[in-house]
Length: 483
Image 1 (cartoon, rainbow, N blue to C red):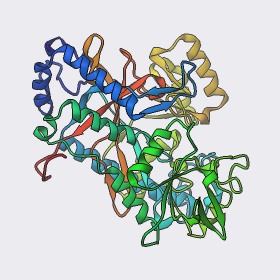
Image 2: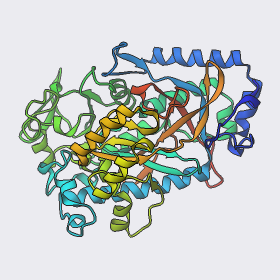
Image 3: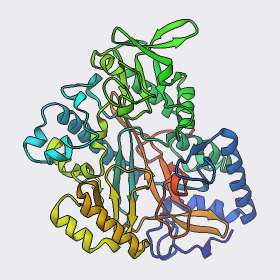
Image 4: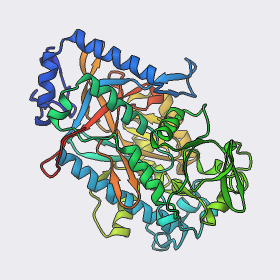
């Protein structure tokens, strides 16, 4: 295949420089590409699509009338990250998670950051994600955010920026694991040659972390799912299977004497740890949303009594807010006395008058986001929107300024992607997964989401995005080869 036709088009391309030179960590992959015909690439892509369907790697789209089940399109060109770059990311993510955990604990206990006016009281105490029921709580081992999926982007300067923290029920890790298995088959010899770090031990690491947060020597662990109609049900069942633990829904569990039991064919069995994939307010109709049909009445009392551990801990959502996000650099300095290793995207808080006026005056240049929306919804991309949409969002901001933030439109980096026209640049983001148990560990791989539509910056799967396998390379300070 002729890669000389590939044009990065003014963005930071992760494989080629603006002069068309291949970056060093991609050179071995480029040799493979040059030897592979377009027809063979097409065949590899077709095989990857078929394998995804066969594996059941689908997700549900609630806002789509074109049919519910979809595959998350996996592009066969991997994203490759060199070791030094990854070490920098890893250090920044560990710092951030550690600080966020201290922040969540502070908000439900001493509230020092509120008293010291590091962050506004009404932003926290007025948030729908601040759970009064968690006040005074210390979760098992003092850890609130056990599993995090942090979204990052690379700008035109080649520097990473944190886009958002996903601390509630971050999804997508099963796609990272399954994508690796599929892409390995496409390039069987390249993995060992390049020295790609493994991700296949994630389920074992997840299980170890879940067992760690229990006080029992051999705890019974379960994955709590809302059920088969949830968009990430494939992932819930996949992770339960890989860990060798029970997949349970609210209907399978009961509470007795402030303990949680699973109903089995042999009677009741106590469950000690739940990896929950249900939002906080649906967990327990007696404590939170009384209309919840998904939760387990009495589970929060069992949690407070120390008879069950949950990951992530109820209440973590208070740090998973796009307005709180703007304060994280200040929180890192406040709790750790350190400068943030990874920068935030500059963020305007519409709740603050000066910021709000700037956003209203420059809405055509900015990305406006609802502070509590997810999946690319409740969002305006100024340069790609109409005057009518600008006017609509101006009014929404005026009516409810606290509900909106704005950020500059970043020139997201591109990675070569296989399309019907051949190899073309497409914009990407990065979601590494971080586990917080005995230590904080960043899994050496990530879910790379890719905007498949030409020129699009929206990478969300629910909005037509796809994914790539992410190869993190071994460095001189690591031993061994990939497996």
